[in-house]
Every structure is written in C-alpha cells, then in structure tokens.
Image (cartoon, rainbow, N blue to C red; front, side, top):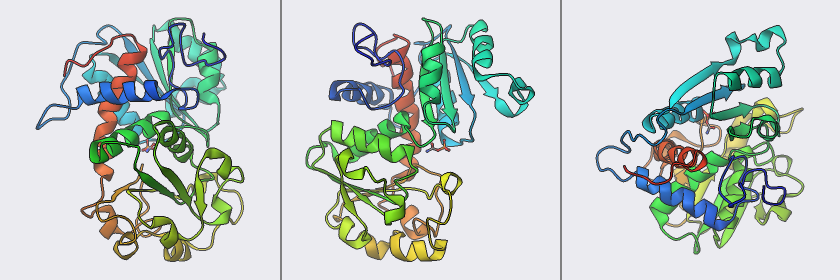
Length: 322
Ligand code: CP
C-alpha cells in the first residue's frame, strides 16, 4: 500500500477504484486514454476483447440503478469476463445475513472484482478493507460520498467535446448537498486543471463546506451560467433529503430549471450534461434534455468504455485492442 491510499498498490497502480480523492492527474488521464482506446471504432462504440477471460465480476447493488449496473455488466462482458448480477431483493440478506458474510460467500465463488453500490457512504471502502488480497472493489456509488466512474465518464464526455480541460468553466447545478456525483465531479475537474468550477443552487442544497472544495458558489442560476463551457444538471435527491429543504417542484423549476432561454447565458457551444435519471420539468426542460446541446445519452454510451478501462486497469490487463 502507498501511504493510507487503499486504492493503489505498491507500484502506484489502481487496486480498487473507490473515489477520485487520492488519485493524481496521471491516474485520471490514464483512465481517459485507455477508455479512448476502447471507444474508437466508427459505427460501433466498442467490440469484444479477451482481456478479462476467466475473470469473474460480481455486480453487488444494494440500491437501484439503471445506467451504472447495466453498463458495468456490458463492459465486463465486452472484456470477456463472466458476470454475476447479485440480486439483493431475492438474496439471503433479507434473512439477516450480514454484508461481510455475503461477501465471504461471494468470494468463495471466486469473484475477482466486486462492483458495489450502497446507500451508506463508506460501504465500498468497508468492503475493500475486508476482501481477500487478490480481490478488488469498484465503488458504483455510496450514499452522498462518491461515484467515481460516473465522474470519469463525465470527464471523458467533456474531453471528447472540448479537448483541453485547462480553459474550461464548468457549472454544476442543483442538489449539490446530497450528490455523490457532484463531489466526484468537482474533484476530477480540479485534478484535471479546469479554470473554474461553479456550483449553483439554493442555500439549502449547497454544502456548508462548499468553498473548501475549490469551487465558486452561486445562488442565482442566470449569473452562474454566464460564459460557461459545460453545464451539468443534477437531480433533486429527494430520497436523501430530510425535512422541507425545498419549495414545490414547480417553484424549483422557476428558479433553477434549465430552459433554452437560460442556456443563452452560457457560451454558444456549451454542452449540457446530466448523470441521470432526469426529472423533466423539475431540473430541466425537455427542450434542453432532447436539444442539440444535450450530450446526456452520449454520457451513458461513454460509460461503457470508461468502465472497461477501469476494470482492465484494476485486473492488470492493460491496453485497448479495440
Ligand atoms: N448516473 C447513475 O448513477 O444512474 P443509475 O442510478 O441509473 O445507475
């Protein structure tokens, strides 16, 4: 281990992928470069390669997912791994089996890699601390804490559209407080050296420690969108809110919903992103979500190549023969 960074082995290479925190620019650029090698084929995003033949990847999702679980499964299959989708709702977890006992049993089935989503912050780190030496963990979203592969597919999307990170101003809009995606994006954008990260939202949805994250805080959407290159909209995470942090959805849309008119404040070639799932008419209008500047579905597609890159790096099968 290097220092207390659980994610890196002695050689400074990825052993687990738990958060952007603790990784350097060279690690993030390596992920993006390897993802690029998987995403080059014209007419088809990726083709099947034998890099992980004989390896077993277990999707361990204790929380719902459409994009992340499915693209991890597809990415593992495109790398020729065998994939187990552990179905929590029909598992012995409902009979009182502990997380660690579940883990030990899945390890006994020879899993090489666990892809973990859990409602509790720190769950992926906990599992990474307890797996056998040859087993790795990827955090697919833990509570409010981190969603590092989402951040990396977002960085991949930005790099594909904008090239260099250095001149970019990026606005992240909405429920920052409860967003693991925003925390990971902010770290990745700052590590990759953008000019400015802005976070925009009502006081109740901006974390108290926001400025220590290296961002500029705006409460006025129009002001915050001025001259930005990238607009990232976030979902209101109502399932993680306690009490009345917000007015009605209608009022929220009036103040913070992205419309074509409001988007005129951003640069003419600004792109619009959203990690999904979208609440149409709450954080953004359909005309924007489906409009010419939206790259939302490209984010989903790029997630396959980025997750292939991370899995191939972690399991030691370097390269991209796509
Ligand atoms: N972006 C994201 O994490 O989506 P899912 O919840 O569908 O995986």
